[in-house]
Image (cartoon, rainbow, N blue to C red; front, side):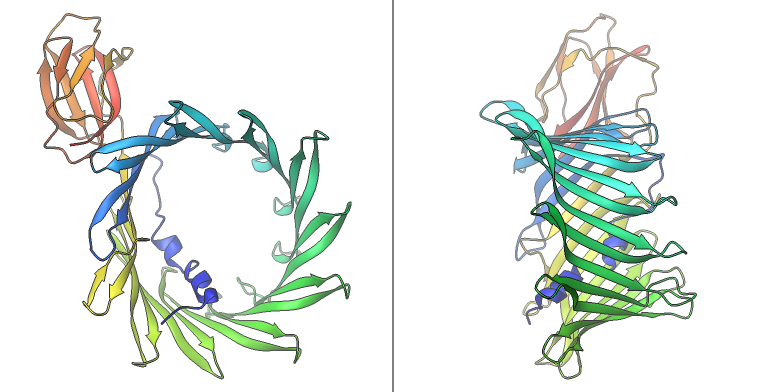
Length: 454
């Protein structure tokens, strides 16, 4: 059974996006890297795709530099993109720089740069620059305005005009609120022929005492008639305590000038406000079963099972599944998404769009020494077991201690070092990101994050 285009759009917005992708993160923990694996279609196996490594942090453990590596093979990686960040005192990102690695030039080339300005803790201007002829130039600018109570009132998009060296208006989104601060209208306009022209708008309705809107109405502007024309509307249903429990989406019929049913959604919410089930039905002279999802939550695992209606068997059948694993600190350590059900084999298998994401965290720096010397060694990165590490050390006080830690700060390997050059036996370690450290009782001579490829 094929899903409709609208059903696929709703599929992307189902509740697992909040329950599976994200978790409450304690500021004490630092995410050092992410590894993304691609599912091998027709199997339950995965192959490495990319590795995202946070290479440096500020004093508040916010990443300053992140490098994205692509896997050339199971044991070989190459740099792909690099991200650089700066922050203000409130932790807002004020500078973002994205580069890509050029193998031909053996250099990082800019993709885009974004500078953000904040006023009273709120984003005021976002300026994007892109390379033109090898030089970064203005490209787009977003300007924000807010109500006295801090709600966004206007978002203005402008494009840079290199001929006039001025910003040209493109579009603007304006938002209005009622006296209680609830959104009641949002309008999109385009700047055409020197004037603002209506494009689309949404209108929210609220019932007294409700925490969620009772209806959202979408309309498009008819330039020929000079009026707003209905497009779709969404009527919400609530639980007894005012929590959204479902909706009915209707489309405006321009022939009959009436609303036609389209899609109905129903949620079940537990006492912790988690969605436990989701049902989607489509209208065809009556509500017809389409999709349903079931969600389960535990300390170390969240799962989501998506099923679709089989019109031949008149029953729901497995379709897709999602799974997210957490460690004892409730930090996400692995997420597997969009594994498909093979009805013939009666088993789950990967598709080419299946992804598995592994998260690596640390609680503190593994080094316990207080004096850090400048790095004095050249460590190949990625590192293959037995490769020579060459150092120009400022000490002859051997032996030194060479140590390998995982990203949780756990010591995995240790060996004495008695010369300026040595090797490390890392074949017992799974391929991945580790911390190499060379030190004595007084100083640390090298601390480096290294991808081990065996």
